[in-house]
Length: 124
Image (cartoon, rainbow, N blue to C red; front, side):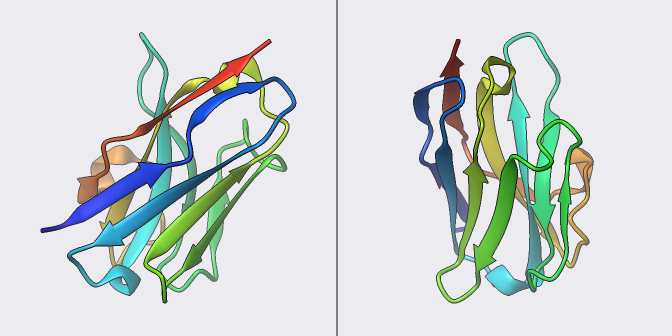
């Protein structure tokens, strides 16, 4: 069974940090680029960051550039999203997704499967 499971969300004060993890199973992990997206209540799903299958190339939304860092460990089938200097506007459900042989697209439609998501809440 193909699975992506996110963890690491929670409640943090503005200026704080969180590290999200996306654990993959049931498929050949290093055939897939992985993206992180977020969705706040009443808003559309928004691209956050992505990483190519070999980890050589990453992409970030302008809103998180220089604050968030995406990385992957193909030996552990895991992608991490380190989030620093968090702001209240970062509050959302964060989900990871797999893109077969992709470049780490910023478009949700390009991804083949998704995790359930983890809640991140940043208080002011």
